[in-house]
Length: 441
Image (cartoon, rainbow, N blue to C red; front, side, top):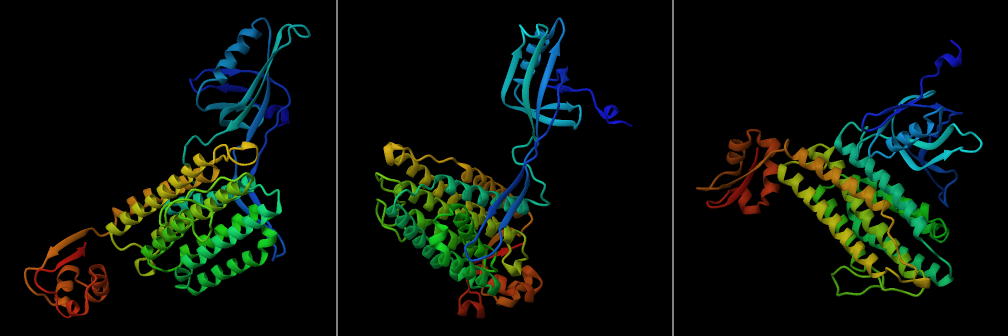
């Protein structure tokens, strides 16, 4: 079969169902990979992060000719302006769900070709859902969103950072170095629970510190490597409560001033970055946002890693534990978001020549998606976990007898019962009358 016979009729079916057949000129399509390249000062080669691909784009020059070309072209333009996704029946590439994207140009050749109208439009393939996933489960989907956040936040720092003078460079480097100290003091203890995680955490930290003078000039790589450092302890086999508390402490240390001196407000409360007549205030806010949002990304990673782990390796034991993790994650995200919003409002119209400090929202959007997916997965998971029941003892009970009565398998549940009730030494010997205990089943 020759190639001419493989061509199809060209048409577009609008969201409202109107199908328009059209003539076309030469065709093409554009595919773009979602990749970022990161170069590290102490390593040869380049790390290329591959997050898949974007939707293909199909630019077309559509031609209407004949006595009714003007009416047909006007009608077609109206279908392109309908809200929602339509279906492009491409003559070469087949049927695709698309949205007409960007500028639509209509040209009426009244003088040169009085019976012809040309419309130029780009159709962009769409997946049609607000939160798509090709992942096998909710936890994997949330972790993929964290990866997308890492890329977006790194690109956002590269776009936001402005260093024009030596004092701006020195200030930025010293502040970043101070925030790295915050990460180490907040997260090192969690990382040390697992030897390979501790080694990874220390290696990344050493790499950033050794190359900081160079990385100041490479903000994309600096942010990417720093976020890798922050997220590393999230996969340690520590209890989920310990991981979430550590990330909460890190976020608070950044939003409340941390080890740096620029800021207003009382100790222990969220700080506002002070305006400057140069780029330092904007750079500081961009820096703090990477670390504060990075802590939330670490919390998401922690909760989803726990969701994928068995109980004895940091996974969830009970329904209240999963719900509490979801609530803590949402609270952390809300606190960091409120802090960032307040700072962007305060810095609106400050800086060189009254340049506003603008939040593009690229990192926030991906992080918000990750948090929402993680919280939803925790709620779903909670339905399959043991529910809580409180019992007030009407008489003194032997610990072994009580655990055997309510759980059956004493060996498998004894430590869990002791830990979930915070039993003291004397209570382990005998549960006293009137003691309220919690059991799960």
